[in-house]
Amino acid sequence: MNKLSILSVGIALGVTLALMSMLCALAFAIWPDATVYFFGAFMHGLDFSAVRLAAQMSPGRVLYGVVGLGVVGLVAGVIYASIYNVVATGRR
Image (cartoon, rainbow, N blue to C red):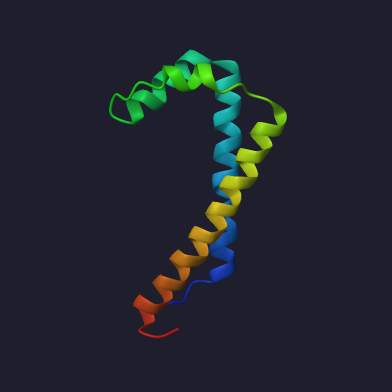
């Protein structure tokens, strides 16, 4: 089995989550009610209507979320690739 590049997987997942966060913010800006309804359905019927009313969107807040999810994705990708390499090859 081939080993994964730890940094490459981390960067790929970080960029993917950052892009998903941007798309989510765009969807929420264009279709706020439909987006809240979709995520409520996605999360098995949870009511997110209070969240929509409590959180005001601003460019700074969106950027904070995009960067934050990018960092979380980077860390998660590094951990995932590290564990995969240990499990797949039996060593580091």
